[in-house]
Image (cartoon, rainbow, N blue to C red):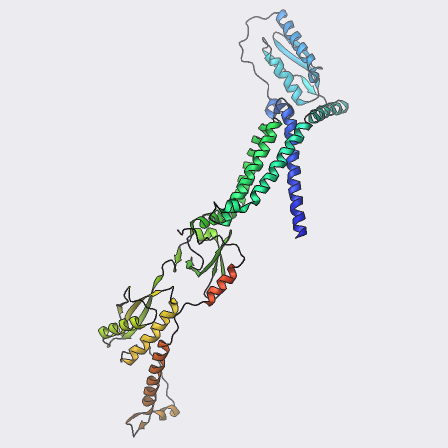
Length: 476
């Protein structure tokens, strides 16, 4: 834990240092007259300004001399253009000489084009490649920049103090999670609100610091670059962003509650919890199913416990010669007598299909899932209806079988002279009577109470883990 805490403090220190360096750079930019004075654009260094003024029909030597003198006076006042020579002939200015930078050459051309009466500027100024001149010029610019930075040092320190103060204020406010828990429906939304408030406080500190340094134009540039980077990152982690938004919407909408039994795209299980990445289900077999929230948000969800009453269906085949009306009455009585089957809504028995050698019936019964286990009630009914149909002589069709008799098994078919029927038939009758009593007894002793084993496992999985589902929030 100490190592993790040290790494967190180191990361925070690096972020503060980065912001301080940003403010220092902003101060240097703010002290200049314009951004173009420090970093000339490519367009300014490559294109010359064309005059749109009308050209006079006549030109005199006096005009040429005045233009040349005016340009020499201007160039003489600018150190970077002091070595530029000027000649003028018929209002066409010819520039020559050497300058230290390409921006100085472009500046000389612009100034010449701005003088009244100039028709065209012929550029012959070269950028000096002398090592001594270039080093001297770089040193002069560095000295000017350093002097300006030292002059702004008090403001820079105050701006840094403002930024650090807002930084700690943001951390203090975001640490008060209980403030946001009162207005957020769950902890996930509360943490998200705390993060947004923290970012707003830090951004306010940055804006105030840049305003103090008169470098607010830098903020627009930084935000523009951040927008481009954010767009690129958004495309790169599109699935992650989609899953995050789905988690946010699911935590607000609550399409299901904890301990609901649901089906999500064929995955059935009891809802354990909703995290910021996935929905956790516990299958009837006790397995954990993790489904990404983006899939859950777009999936068709069947919630089997949203309503307390749930209806089961049992398909029952009977022989074609059986009395269908008696079978339906018997099945209805069996439904009513089964523990856990509700009398209201009333059970229902219908004929599903008539086939060549079998009649298919469908039995419907409602179960209150709060008091009885759905599958247990369904199983108890099937046990009872099987025993009752057999006891009333209603036969379920048997599938065809191939019987092979050997010489040993054929002796078992000899007639019992005392009873007057085959020995095998007598044994089968005794087995049927025994099976009837056992089936009826088992059907009456079936436990239909809700199963608590899976509920205990769900509670164990929930303990101490993140859960965005809030039982107090309204469900969708």
